[in-house]
Length: 223
Image (cartoon, rainbow, N blue to C red):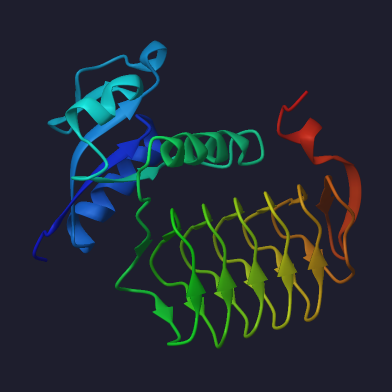
């Protein structure tokens, strides 16, 4: 694919390395650098791409010349990735969105920035996806559902039609959400959880049917 844009990846761990490879192989972006907060810079390059301190990126790769992407997993219930995204915006960067060429996205879907959609996702009619969302591989997002900012949808998750997934939510592998369900902000589901009722803020849900067992903040190590 012809490269017409330059990209900085904020992050220097596993997620950043994976995202960079997808951007390089399946988008119009060329990844020109990784960056991390200076205290976390532990190597000079990743796969021959330089790693520099975040504090210096606008000097070497100004927002007028490069876009950026905040690459972090669901650590601390997505709060680390949110902090990174917000820091990029404060520096004036436009944040890139990646949509795999091997996913199905209907023509009237709305997708924000700093979104990463892996292969084999199906995103149906009039779905809305906010900013800073990751959809790992193989998910189904049903018609007219909404995914709010800073969510992480793992793999083989089914979100049925007319659902609303609140901010900062984590949905575990093989979890399912029935039609017309609202997942409240800061919630998480365990692998294989079946959500058949609306949830309350900040709880971890497991089982079939899923029940809240304790705080999602506790589950994700947030004090």
